[in-house]
Length: 461
Image (cartoon, rainbow, N blue to C red; front, side, top):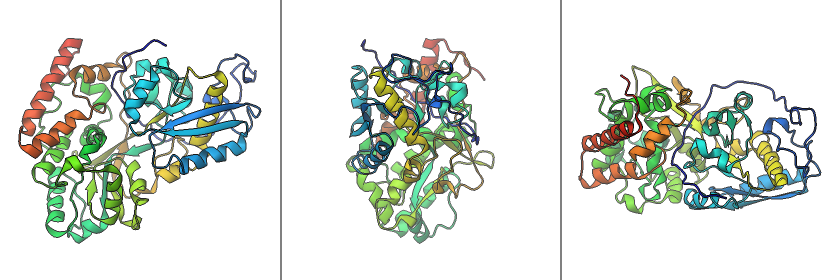
């Protein structure tokens, strides 16, 4: 298989919930049932009926995951439950610690397994190079959330493993002990609360998880809907904007998010040595109350609850930005499942069966506390307190501009959602005093403008 350079990009989208019944027909649209090993085209996910179709199919499939903490327990249990329905299909999991790096290498070989989370570095235009079509956009968009995430040219190549909302994981007991009665609604209120926690408790006010890298890149998730209230901001407007990282003067927009990060570090409201932070232990630490807050998606809530003896102390608050008197939270998909288009056809069909069972019939979303893939599913309890906060997705790009954000983002090397280093640079600059936030944002603006000029992008007012 020809090697390709994988562009770094990820889009996060969620469409409004619709309650629909599945009209799975178990055929290929022509009325003829697909048979394993027949050489026929792979059925789409909406065409198969789990537990009824392909009962005689024999296959051994491998599923790759980044969840090394539960791969041999919870995920193994899912596989065993599915194999009771399909005893001739063997499902095994492989957990990968350095998931993104490893998958970027494995994808180019075509020999990596059968079902996996699609790396964030795979551009939408390259999805068809590596992954099996799951169905057409118009059909699957009526059934599942987050479908625009991994779709290109009206074809779907991935379905998200549920989704999250953007907010802050926090320990409710610690915030109360610090004397905080009302959750913050602005960056400065948030910083004042962190100072109260530092002054009145023994907890680390804000834990950055700097050494893991990816938690720093997670701050990029907050610069769009949560900071602007505009679902068009990222994919429609940002590629055309002039100096999008400048201070707006009202503590909204990308600047406000990075201000919150920079000032938290500069004011020493984070862990003493960010370079020695540890992701796995941080989950237990916030459960126990040794940490007061972490800026992470709502997917992290259940992991933190399960990491200690006081799960009821773990809560989730909206990110502290208010736009024209209203609060917003971005919502979007987690990693999306994709099927290897280089696998044997029987394996592709088996992977399709397991994928559909997993996202529709297993208890994966209850366990992970995430927004389910099915639009008919219930929202997780973690978001029950987002009263008055509007959940919005990033709208897809305009027709003909599907790759424009990716192109400007990659060309500029600002790396929104696909490169942790720029956000790590913000922390380092605040920690050592090497650059002000304004200097950093001026550099980002200059890079963004240069990329727009190189690509011939029209700058809109």
